[in-house]
Length: 112
Image 1 (cartoon, rainbow, N blue to C red):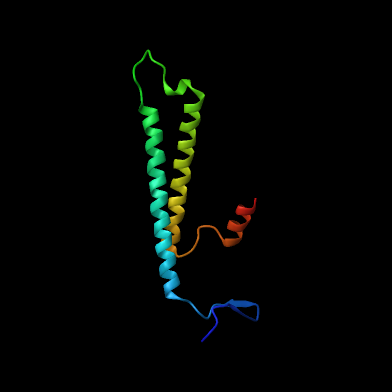
Image 2: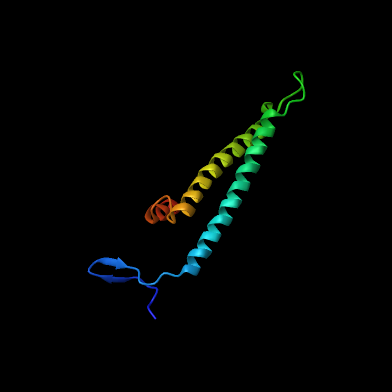
């Protein structure tokens, strides 16, 4: 049985062993992540829209008169935009079987 470790031959890295079970598990895991990211996007967008459209009358105080509610609205908008980007990256990874950014960039971004 061949080793799942890549072997070096002449400077090139060659992969000799590839498990279809791990590919299926990875695809299932990425699909589950996509569902969670979609739920986060929906909830944060709904929260931002409800805060934006909530009005009681013209003479009463509005949510944007309070700093805490403005902070929550901006946080919800940022989460919605980030979740949208992450959903697009997740769809890219599922459809192409490759990450959007190279691995070195992902490691570098996590360490900074």
